[in-house]
Length: 103
Image (cartoon, rainbow, N blue to C red; front, side):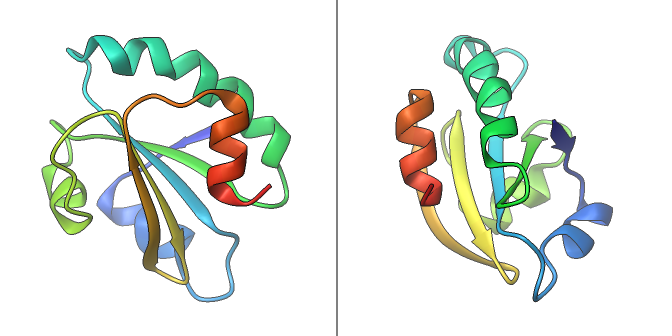
């Protein structure tokens, strides 16, 4: 399952001691984002209990994109204890995504 991220739930999901947060930044008009969406969705259950998968629409929540320096979509950011650890721009396979989060 993927959580719809917004500024209100970001603080709760990224608080110290919580599971790592994997954020996919996307836009509804982005072709590669649409192609990456099913890969991201199908990978989320494989990391259940180890990471929380979330997604943020850069047009609805530009402040979140700005906070993480997102300039292109799709972009995936790994967050631990509220701090970004890694960032990857572009599509990934399920295996690449799992490797990115350390699974």
